[in-house]
Length: 201
Image 1 (cartoon, rainbow, N blue to C red):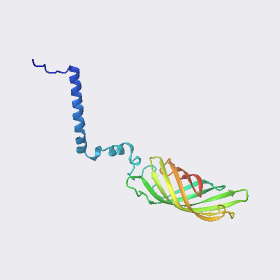
Image 2: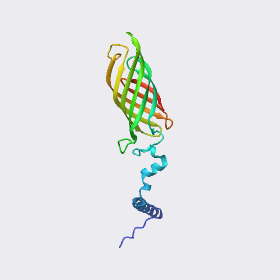
Image 3: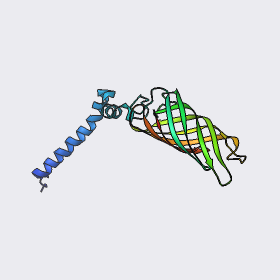
Image 4: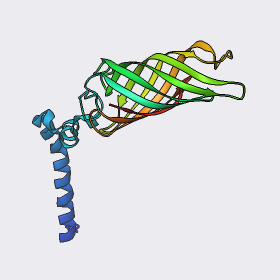
């Protein structure tokens, strides 16, 4: 005696049909996306939704990109008992950066700080000019970070190494919060310059 053919119940048949349709659609979508061209790519969709300045590698002049040279004024707190202020002039020498997949910029930064040193042994004014290369990384519409490397000069009022006159390599790291296309709050820490807080405009 032959066995009766298996038949699925109506709910099971509907489930099987739905799974088959889903599998068919998933196999058809990649081919459709390829035929549609780059306008349907994820990068293009993000570009149209959020703007180019939020994407790495676009190298666009977004809201947080400086179009040309900028001026910075800052308060300065030296590591060796000095308080004062300073200024920087920064000139982009590679405005669109050097890395193809990163939104970056190389700038030449030239400036100086004037400190009032106060120590148990003596006190007086000192000047610290410097020149540095600044590598900016633009992370989003309002933030950027930058390492710096260069040369700093100290002309101090004393005879000790850190309060006298000497030349030293300058190393620094900073961050900016951009609130317009020209203005940003700057926080920088470095050696031998110390801690700096200022405004770029």
